[in-house]
Length: 400
Image 1 (cartoon, rainbow, N blue to C red):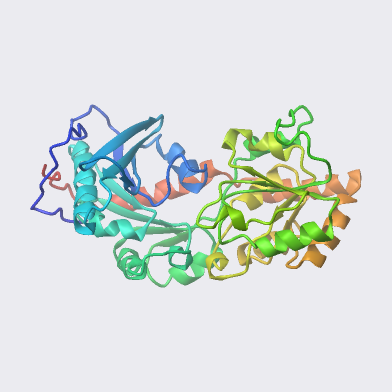
Image 2 (tube, one colour):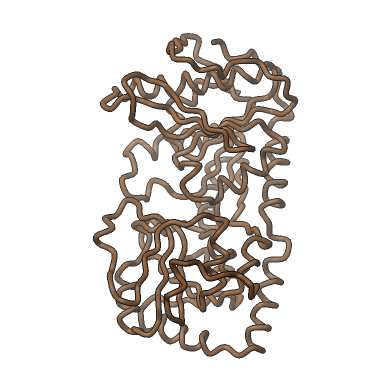
């Protein structure tokens, strides 16, 4: 359990977060580097389910706007999103203090209920340590220190968080292998699947979205964040090698210059799409493709889209990402190809798949995915959090 900071000065801006509420749910404060409304991925899958058991406050990194420190509160149904607001040029120390003040106001809502603090970014420990948490959770979904523009202090803060967290979850086997010796309570939870959602892509009644309808076949599709983890050279060279294939690329472009994306008549950058609409796009693809670069930023990734492509019924080709090779490549569920020639060869083979071969492939896919769900993942995580809370003693409420 963390002791709160005794010297707390709250800004005068209206922040009605410390109002007592009649609620038997425990309070869960999530400190995240990801925006809730950016793309629907692991945090959203888990936390929408966690809302059955917790009152959830999802605190994002600050936005720079306005003339004085403030915040924005967004109702997202099961989750309340909080965006700290800071004037441009705010001193880093003042920025941390403002974020800590906001977190303390939320924590004050607990009113004797257990408080769980869930970290997605170790950087938040710089102010999160002020919270008197009954349990600290670290969901290490990525190796953030390997990403472009990672802050230099991230590694040291993660080392502290790994030592002090009551329970650590990892987003894949590669991350688990390097984390399990750093905390006595580390558990591997690879990407799960909403099979019913992506299974809609197997239906024949999905209308082809208007911005895709005019694209010819065969279509080789990708969806996800487009950043330094994508091998843009592989995309360009494969598209040149197979000019009759149409490459449909869905997702927001971040941390890289959109002007650097390869351009060709058969490469189609359609931008970000709503999670609810993805099955409609995928229903009209012929192959799924994951052209990840092999570099430090992809060394530990466990792509959520692997089981999502499979649940949609698509044959899948991927570069040699460790957590795709094992288990998907080893079990023959995903073809592994790391150069344009290999991608083209596998694509030709998969596009020629017979109805009987497709039926056999889908039977293997469904057998592998059976029992793998975000519901089951959350239930297992919840049990581990409950175990971490079990020995906790009643705490003094955070002072405001």
